[in-house]
Length: 328
Image: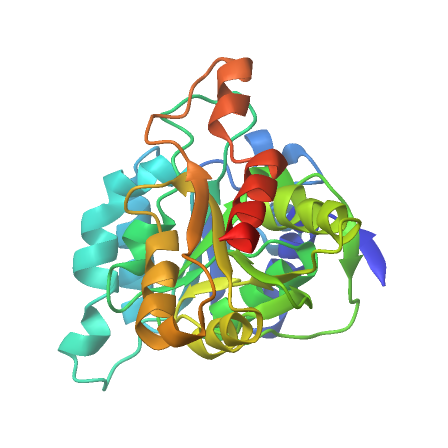
């Protein structure tokens, strides 16, 4: 396999789909120039290959970008547009929530609206609270949207290709912290189904459900540490929040009898609460201990690097949560 970063893997997916389907185009703030001049960024070099008709730099208006995507999908194109940071989804929310998510329903299923909104997410790079606020739970709460949040480069490539080919609107969250770390990615053409979770590490004692950056930076590291103590974690990577792969989660919880949910977003109203509710509703009698959540505190993301590290969920917090459910 090739060793590439998530940014490079997404770039491969975009380029391959643009070559395959002339109806696919890219738009967003600086997608052809500026910060995307780095070869590790997802749209690097695409303007040179496909030209300004298919790689469109837009004005600084997230509402206009999302509206462009909706209008283009109505006309049969497959737009892939970028919202530069997750909090900026609030500026585009009318077009996303009241139009993109609902048009297929309002058409009685007779029309399709294929569009992808790529969103940079995650904390840890000193961008401050107005650029760092994980809002995946907001998007998953909106019927009609598919919400994808990969934690590996290989998953990002396969899921991006599926998202572009999907006839429904897809919100595709990309944690910026994963843009810069190489990992194995298949070189052949492949897709990964939207709505299918993946057991990244089998285990017998505790199920840890997570997604995005927390998979590699916290969950898998904690699993290695606990294995030395005789505790084997089963790591379930959601990859997709909507539709949610309930079967994989419940199968794992019924196997281990214990559940810890780990995510970077704020605790209150975070998507982890949905996972805990699923376990309580459909696997209550299989649980050997109360469920636990490890998440960010209910504060804005600090700009100060030490305070930002305090904000981010870490391995020590997950280790403690696992030991708590083991001892309950």
